[in-house]
Amino acid sequence: TYLMQSLAFQGYNKEYAKTFGGKVWWRDVQASGGYKIQQNIISNHFRILDNADRRVCSSFEFTYMEHRLKELSEVAK
Image 1: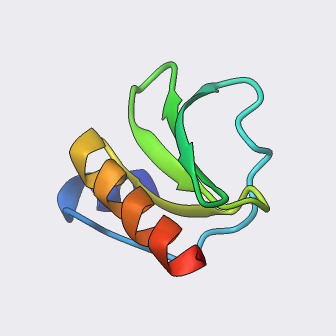
Image 2 (image 1 turned 30 degrees about the vertical axis):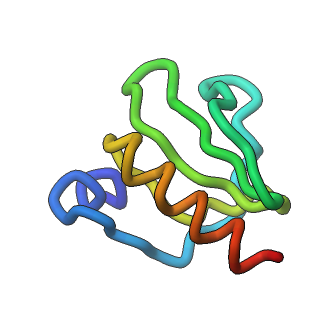
């Protein structure tokens, strides 16, 4: 459901539950300020996790995810 919302609404954010950190279906793409962008190896969509492995946002748009990572990293300083 949340994946569909991310597809339908650019920049959709939701309070997500803790994940398992992407040990199996995800690869780390970029990290900054205690946050990391991961890409799903099946669907190719992206997500940002905080340092407690909670999902902050997700999207198929990597440029958007880079922008969000920069924002989150600046707030974390």
